[in-house]
Length: 126
Image (cartoon, one colour):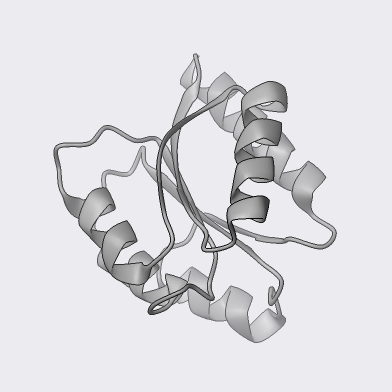
């Protein structure tokens, strides 16, 4: 089983490296990407797209990852939302928890934890 994963990240270098790393190490299949809040929200809440995991940055080319997270509060419980940000402060973590985020990871030092999270999600799904 592989996780159908959608990426909301506005930095193409970070996005491409993240996709490649997670596809190789964590049984992730990228099903799409967005670099703005509006694009991310539209794709994720469309209902036509199948996804298991969304990885969202907070600071985007347009809008905010917080808007994406808020728009996805009523998602299917099997669909997981995680934040990957350089600003994973205690306040941000608390705000993300209020928005129903399943996990928050710091880009600078928690990539390994994100990989483990993805592997755990795959294993939990069978």
